Image 1 (cartoon, helix red, strand yellow):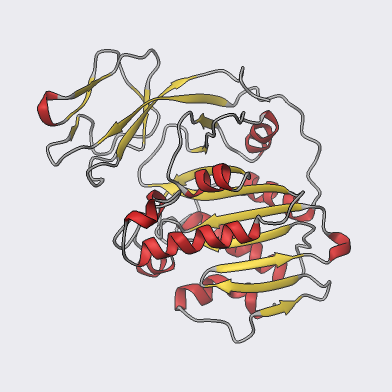
Image 2 (cartoon, one colour; image 1 turned 90 degrees about the vertical axis):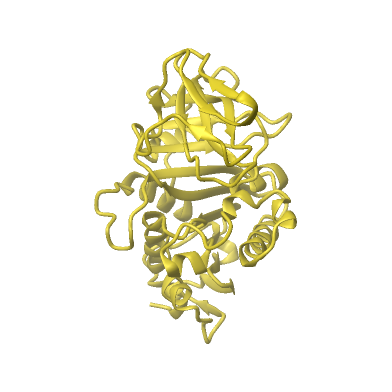
Length: 335
């Protein structure tokens, strides 16, 4: 196996490779760009015009997707997986990965779309670097651009594997992309309707990629992900890399679709979220329930039919989102 196939090992050790560029027997070029960043380029004659960005480890303790990308990189370096797509593999937060922590000082996934300019420290610099790497990778015109940012959640979920589809004014969500996600094992998709500051929102909004945040189960330490079934996703990614994806139709029967009703913003240290600390994502909430309270008697009361909560986290910093209230929706606006 080529030494650059050991990107995860190099990243966890904090080392640069001795050789920055290597070729497989079939002429696939692997190029180390920066810490945790590896570009894979097929021979020109085999290139099918797809640019695929696969990122994981934006939160350092989300190890199942990190291990998935590691397996794909190994297979390419051994010559077992022969790409026809250009690929950029990114391990997002190397220092947090080394510590086995979600982040060190700042949540990187709240520092995109310009937010890193309002912050300081190594993680703000890393968010800026990730934007630069993504922008350079997606700079070639006339190509199909796809970004999957792979995560696992800090809590359990009533729907274990789900995706968040970013929003941009004047751009409609793609039915074809949802069909592919469903085949990859994704059970539900949140169709967002406002701008965001996460990595996938940056590549969707600024770089015109189809982009998704994928939540793939609960975060566990390295080597303890036997209960996370990423088989369907791995098969889909291998097809995308090889250029052998079966024809997908337009049927999304069985895929649950949600839209954002409201975001719960924590404004002060007095903020209180009236949910148990172990409440699961997609827990349904009754109308009239007082979901959260903050200063000046401000309250978030559930008014929507079928409302559910995802990403409840009262420990976020003031000014950040402490949860999302979502409701079921249909695919009427898809193209």
